[in-house]
Length: 589
Image (spheres, rainbow, N blue to C red):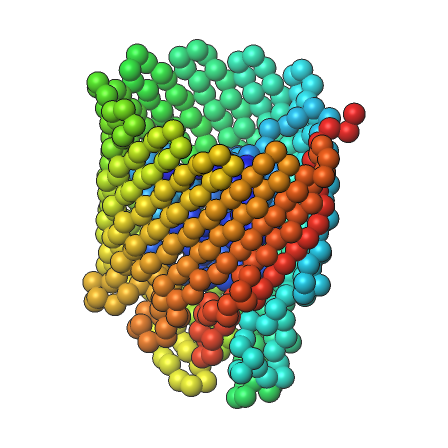
């Protein structure tokens, strides 16, 4: 498991959390593009090279509440302010039975910063491409009660996602405007705790042409009650989410001189869910028993041009029960778990898991084996969409994906050095991917289908070193992901690495880093190649006085042009971006 603390989150640049998590090898959205320019439906997360479409194969939790969109499983990264998180935990692999659907490749847990008495935050940044961001927040802590909240607004003109040589009269910058906020109330007791939480997000995006744009709105309310009885404790969680996604799609004519509107799409959805846990701690062993459930309803409503209407959607109800336990035997600790889950398509799934850790001195070995699943989303079952001149059709006959896998690892923890290496192997059945049906110079037609079995195997390694005011980290992932036909799984590079060096003192830190991706394929036929690339970033932060700091950030410092997709012509990632600003974070009296 990779843990990114508050200090590390500040050192990695990126307006949204997805750009900061790209420094974790194996973390990827469907395409290489940032959430600043990517269509929301491509912002699903996958880990360790298991990801062939925009659906998220990783469960993302924010204070225990699912962050994944109820209709499509993707993640609106604009909902979360990275500066307001205390830490992020990335669990790669389905090594626990606690999580059900969406956790095929693992889980990412986000934890909000703890409330502090009389604390206020405020910030403003400006940058190139007409970029501005501002926000404010605060918290206060009484003896038995705490309240905290924050909000931020962001706007940028954006950048062209079509290379200059291919641009035509229809092309314009892909920009985004969003506002996100959340508020949380905590009731604190000696043995119990209750929090109530709500968040709201609205965003508007230009998708790179005159007629293509989208907008989204989402609101969530949630609550969690925790009670400690000594050796036993219970936790009860509930939430309700409402969202609406709207998008326009067009056909781009030859030479990109004109485009014609094909349809406008509206996707209202809602989700209601909850979970309950009971944990018992014994002498040398622990047990966790729980159950969860979720009901999702959503509809894809397409207003066709010039006339007509196309409607698809429905309701999915899922629920499951699980047990997870661990016990010690000498220097070793063993883990066992099982989940029984109803997937919402008249199908049931059994997910067992097991693992161990054993340590001596500064060394630790670990291993796990598991079986997990992912049910198709309403988006995959019922929603058709276009990306440029590439059309992807829905498929209501999709079956759940499943994975059987395992990993072995070795860790070393020294006074100034930490290192870890893991080898993993995953066999994935009924992979939901976009299968190419027709390719012409003017159009690509695909459909979501359960493809042949796929295999993902590889090695990941991470080394951290601290020396005086210096901290360096080197991470690498090798993932060979292929279908049984030997064709490579699309959107998965074989090699992904990152390196970062930070120098910090009491009032200053400077960070420089690079992340790199090897080539990957856009399509299931391995005909459309996205070449490899490397991008450099730099972050400088200087404390001016207690509570007040200045920051300067460069992303893609060397202005490297790289491809993020191919829809009869290539799409490109962000050019050099910079931002500078001031931030206040401290007590006001």
